[in-house]
Length: 272
Image (cartoon, rainbow, N blue to C red):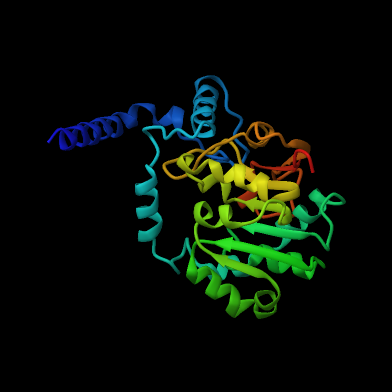
C-alpha cells in the first residue's frame, strides 16, 4: 500500500507541475528561429531559461516540463510513420547540401577512408551522400526498422556496403568496442536523446578512435527536444574541441533552413 501511495503522490505532483507549465512555458521552451526566420538569441529571462534547461539536461535530470523517458517512448511509438512530418522517404532523399557542409567542416581531420559511424542514420540520406563524396567505410545505428528498410530499398548499394544496426543507442553502443570507429557523428539526433540517456555521449567518446562530430541545436527546448551545450558535454568527457561553426541563412545560404541555429562541433577524443 505504501508503494502505491508513493506512486500516487509522484503522479499527482507531475500533474500539478504540468498544469503550472502554462506559466513558465515562455521561459523554458525555446525555438531555434523567430517568426521572421532569424536565429534566436536568448536574452534576459529567456537566456536564464535556456541555461537552466541546459544545466539540467546535461546533468541527466528530467525537468518537469519535458516528457519522461516512458512518455517519450510512447510519443515516438504513437507517431504516424509515413505521415507528412515523419516520412522515411524524405530522409532518404534529403537535400545533400548539409552533408556537403559537414564533409567540409570536419576535413582534413576526418578522412575518406576513416570508419565513420552515424547515430540515428534514419533512411540513409546522410550516409548515402557521404558515400557519393568518396567515404568508403560507413556504419549507422537507428531504432526505427521502417527507416532502415527504406534505406535498403532506396540505397541498395549503401546498404550492401555499410554496417547497419537496428536498436536503441542505450542497448547497442555498449556492445561496440572502444575505438571501433574513427569518427562518431550525429546530425539533429542529439536533441532527441533524453536526459535519462545522457550516458550515450560517454559511449560516443569511448567508441570514437579519434573524433566525435555533432551538428545539433543547442538552444531549442521542448517537450521532447533537449537543449545541450555540446562543448561542455564532451569537454567534461575529456575531449578537446577542434572547431565550431554556427549555421544561419546568411553564413550558409546553400543549406536547408531546417538547420538554421544549429552548431557544428568537432572534437578530438582524449588520449587518442
